[in-house]
Image 1 (cartoon, rainbow, N blue to C red):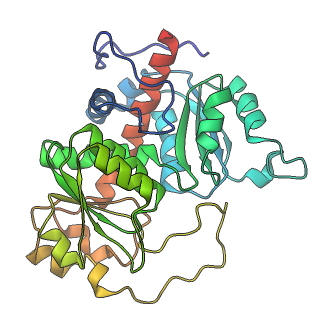
Image 2 (image 1 turned 180 degrees about the horizontal axis):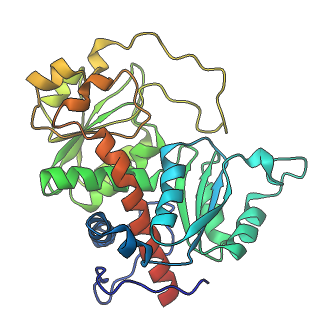
Amino acid sequence: MTEQTMSPARPSAPAGTGLPRHAVSLASWRRGDYERVWERAEWMLGSSTETLARTAPGTLLGVLFYQNSTRTRLSFEVAARRIGGSSVGFSDATTTRAGDFYRESLEDTVRVVGSYTDVLALRHTDDDAAERAAAVSPVPVISAGTGDREHPTQAMLDLWVLRSKLGNLTGVTVGYVGDPACRYARSLVHGLAAFNAAGIVFLSPDGAKVPGDVQRTLARAGMTRRTAGSATELLRGVDAVTIIPFELSDFHESAVRSHSRSARLDERFVFDGALLSRTGTGVPVVHTGPRGPELPPETDDVPNVHYFEGVTKGVYLRAALLAELLAEHRRR
């Protein structure tokens, strides 16, 4: 592994604690694990570019993206550069032996790239890809979204932003807008459970159902589960709102190129400037991106909408996670 020099001013890990080796699922992450990463991310936000570059110089991130991405992939690559490292890998598997005639197995690809790098970020179309990668990887693996299973760093990011607005996540009720079968929802409920949140109110497309595994996670955590029939109703009953694109691509496909988005979204699901200015003005709103008609650009000037703040903080969240996993890996 690359030799690294950590800045002495950085937050230190509490004695006797250790992060999970990988970030492929949030099911095993504890409250202290999130707080450790967020503390590092907050420190990074307030640090100069020169100080950040001394965090983990020489670190090499392996980027294995079998599925399209903008914010997640680029923020990982920028994060590696910010902490003094760099990245190698691919954003299109068809340019590699993993996606051409040979169809090299995921396990072999992970072992090969893992032998070159210090940590891996993987986005894949298979639900179990992150777990399979972690089972064979010589270095820490971070899921950047795998199938319908989980999207850990997006949930970590949104919960960090929401906590910064609310002060605390314990006892809060969060509104979830979009399909509850999305991989993001699975990571989100694990995170909320770790902080003893009160519950979730779902505002979902017609016919969408909360999957059984999400229901079980909520039940084990003692969190309530309700539904709302409109954006207005949702805002009146929650402490915060998190939104995903209302129309989703197929997460089991590497690219969906022949999709045409609906011309108009039902008003029940639209969080426009007029609604946010008269209802739930104190309710912070985040969106995973890419945003669509559910959160139109006119909301950019609404004080409690934090879409682009989340985009910016995504670099620091992922930089902090990289730094903490690398530090943990060296200690083992």
